[in-house]
Image (cartoon, rainbow, N blue to C red; front, side, top):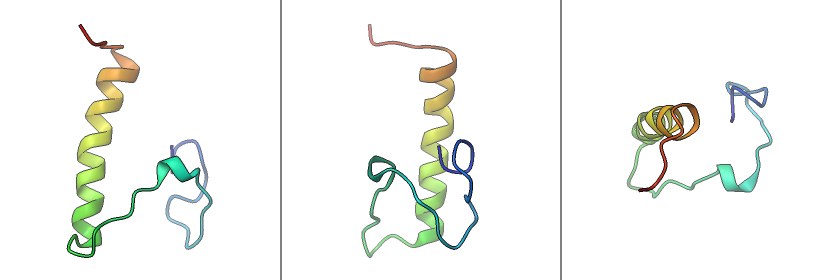
Length: 56
């Protein structure tokens, strides 16, 4: 996870796996895109990785 498992979360240049990158449409401002990704990834990580909630 960028910023947790990889250094450089606030660096000008970072390397990340291609599966961790999602291009934003031109109509989505960067600030809003950041909020959306954080608002999704935090509860997802809590439910799936920590609480181990599974389908069914």
